[in-house]
Image 1 (tube, rainbow, N blue to C red):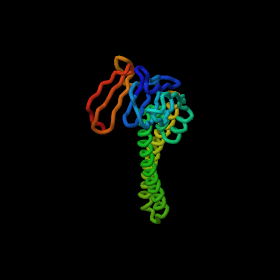
Image 2 (cartoon, rainbow, N blue to C red):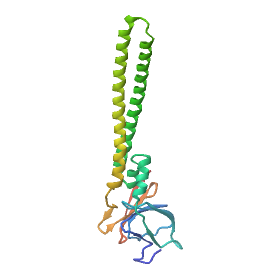
Image 3 (tube, one colour):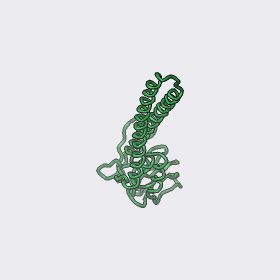
Image 4 (cartoon, rainbow, N blue to C red):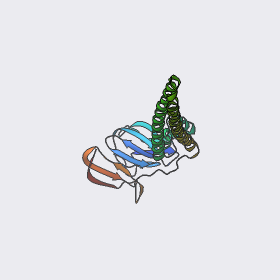
Length: 233
């Protein structure tokens, strides 16, 4: 075990304020700088998140002979990476920057506008084919009494094709507008927010939750622990 007042693990980050999750036999969550005053043993996956920074991951062994101190530097999320993602798939850059709502809206809007464009384009092609067919029938007419009716058909088909073209252009404009706005947003309007972790009277807390039916534990920085029976899946 650890000597009284000596943490089993100390985690620091640059910058501080990263939300760290330790996943192993139990799951522990804290915010850097973080000192864990519990006896933990085994192989743990470490994941650190902070708004505006790349997720940091590692693997550590805790317990006797294992790691006692862990320090890491987080890299800021790149505007270039966000731009490239959104240029490939609208909304992807927003997801990368941590704006899930905006990412969902841009992605869904692009899918809907793309579907509308595909539909209106197909409709325009059909109307254009009908117009060309009407022209051929007019040119093939051999009796004078047919010409007026065939020409009226050509004009009707031309009007239908024009309206279909206008609808196609509106859908294309909507798709292009959403795509452009998606790029402007990801470059000039990055998300803002603060990392949040559970807190108690002594400050940020650590949470341990084994899978399945069992006991969950909440440990504060001063070493106090509360436990409860729970089921997790």
